[in-house]
Length: 426
Image (tube, rainbow, N blue to C red; front, top):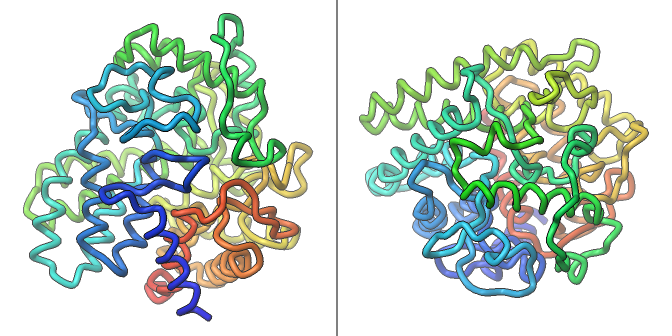
């Protein structure tokens, strides 16, 4: 069965492969997405190492001069997606969006290098990426942590990858809808409307895009101008892990200055994360920087933080929290607790299970020696695949596949799970 799943996963990756980049799925997402590409490269590395490096290289080739790596790269025209280049208007020779996404590239580059069959060749492919990822990390702390807290803020929900999370509800009320240009959504042509963000949320998404566009996408201004400034522990956990892994790889490849900068960022970030810890919830919580208050919602963001090298006692508490959640949810890990009043098992990030988050959580827990909960997460993830195929996400109670089909990063994560690499490391 494992070999058949891997073969099917590889078939999906190849189907969605555009030569130098991969689309998440045809129709719904016809371009290159930032963290999709980095995680997809991991799956590619099992059957074509050179192609995996091309995926990351293509992504980083479209880095902005200030260091930001955009969340979408519009390699070719496709009217089936909104908002397209005509909405973003970022002025790039090859159009891109103007915001970013979770920076998993440092983690991906190190993992590809460590698994490489030819280390000398892998080092040659990795070296050009080190400085680019280091510059991206520098951009985060320069432009999204202007007061040097050690933690960065999101300025748009799309940056988190968790577009319609319950975490954003209260803060999103500050975002007006007045003056939003008329638009026609395209996502509802490809997916069930009950699985997607609402129209009201989309209007606020577009308001923020228009606001940032009016500032000419000047990243020295966008943080302070945004009415939405959220410190997300999951996002910061990914950034911290990327910094730590980039530091380790840079040290191995003879770049001590890059290593030192990123190690310092990771250490400062881990220390700063303590301010987001909720003893009552046994996990981290989001912080609304604009309002100066914690967001009292125990979503998957505070569990995803275990992907970072957080203190072992915190990882153990998160592991226990997940096992407790597993008593309510049939399949781990729901993006919003099943018992929450705002839980919606089919609507994007308000309840469904996502295999990419399952992978990162299980990877972090494996590093902390939490093998029992890792086994549960991996088992649930593979059960979802067997039940519903390679979907974008799944209902945590019924296992119903939701969103897009034949999804690239879901396939890549299946390969990761079946490799047993993380469980063997634990």
